Image (cartoon, rainbow, N blue to C red; front, side, top):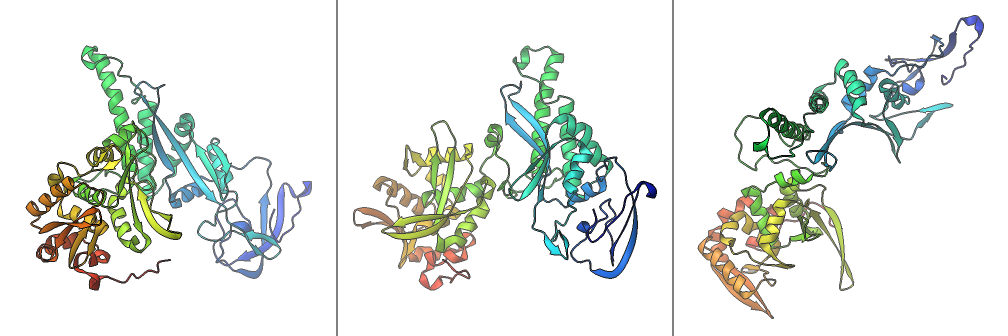
Length: 469
């Protein structure tokens, strides 16, 4: 029905629905939704009347492919996705699934006169858009969540026979078109069963024809995995320049959970390893949830040092699935707030756990000379250092033998003058200010401005631009 209007449908008007309603200055939506519910908020009603003849039909209308394409082009999440999971039912031990999924946010309507409200904001789509998808594709599932509707197509036959032909005919634009073409390429590999061949026998024992088939299955699965990485911007399909290893790692925050094989492929380059070593020697902890599982790293800082924590997080976000979160600790009947982030459980971090932990106790690795760099030393001082006519490293958790090893590394590799100081029943490492100033040029490129006071004293402490609660 039309807001602000009344019509009459009889056998005498030959199936025509005669109605009048106020017209607008501007563009009426060209779709089949000729009602006020599809007008944008910036349109203004004028004092005129428009006569509309609408033909009545009992035939269900088809979904508008142009409207759907427009929606998908503006939809800023991953509509087209590839999921690779472990499966004992499949010969190569992994299954591949495709899905097409979009969400339709639900917003409160704003009243306009006596009629129903208009949808406002950037998502001011016609109310029947969700039905457009269902009518056009004639497949998929619609589920209502708390604040949005979700439309998903998962079965491969519907994807290959209905979804792909629609978007092949009505072209997408920009990054959506690139993602769709990659997704379609993966669908083509799946339709040819290029990913399902089993390696049941050792390759040298197979007949030549069968061996080619077996190798093709493994290659097909790897091709699909590569397409998935390109779609999530983890690797570039066109980049041909030489880049420094580890300098182009992107964040994986919000990316899907890794499979076992994907976790094994993640490595730590030398420039990132320096950061890991520095924060592990100071405030970071490595956690193993079970004996056979991988390890993950957790890094905490008090709330007043949240700028430094985010500085570290942005450099290690390639290994994280989510951003920092607020922590709360009650100590001596006083509440202390802080921030922390945790990495994924990865094999490369498990290797660090084996170096820095003996059981549940943190230790100094024997190859510290090779592991510790100027960047790592800077992060160690940022976490555990205090300045008072020199830098004191809070090394209470290490034994005296480990402190001797650390001092040897600091003296021989970095040229720092160090001594061991006793504080109560604990031993600390003291670095003389003279040697700090002498080697400051080696450390300055890695020091965050808010941490400079830990190297040169309180007069260099920068007042935060943010309010700490």
